[in-house]
Amino acid sequence: MNNQSGIKTNRNELTVLSVSPYEQDHASLQDIMGHSTWKLLQADKISTAKNLLHDHAVSVVVCEFQLMPGTWVDMLKHIEPMPNPPSVIVTSRLADERLWAEALNLGAWDVLPKPFDRSEVIRSVKVAWEHWYHQVPSAAAPMSVMRAAS
Image 1 (cartoon, rainbow, N blue to C red):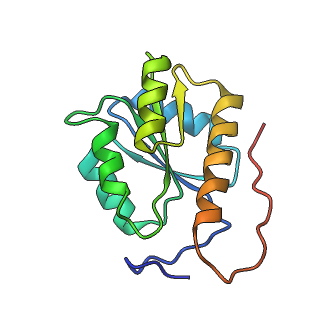
Image 2 (cartoon, rainbow, N blue to C red):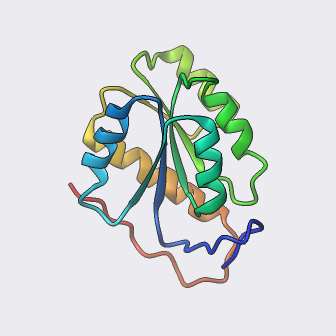
Image 3 (cartoon, rainbow, N blue to C red):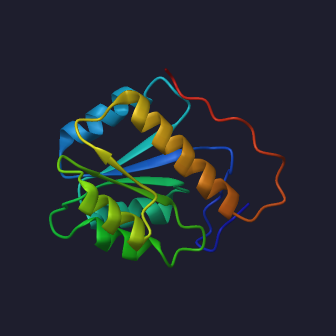
C-alpha cells in the first residue's frame, strides 16, 4: 500500500519516531523497544523529524514537550494534515493534569511522564499503533498481533 507521499506502508509494521533534543530519551526508548520487532527512528529537532516522516511510514511519534526550537504542538501541526497521520504521544518530566488536558484536547494520543516506565511505554505505543492502524484505509489482510519485548 502506498500513501500520498509515495512511501510504501506496511500496516503490520510498527515504526516509532522519537523526537527529542535529549539523547537520554532516545537511549531509553531504544532500550525499551530494542528487543522487539518495532523500528525506532530518532530526531533531535522538528526539521529532522519532518524529513524522517517524509521518508518513512511512521505510525507513532513519541515527542518531547519542549523542542529546540518549538514544542510538541508544532510537531502535531505538521502531522495533522498528513494522509495517514501517526498517533502522537507527548513526553515530559512535568507531565501533570494540565499537560494531559492540553495534549488530549489538541489531538495527541497520550502523555508519558519521564523517566520512562517500560510497561507504560509499551502499553502506550501499542495502543497508539492500534489506533493508527484502524484509521489507515486498506484492503490488507486482518491485523496481526503486535508483540513487544517484556
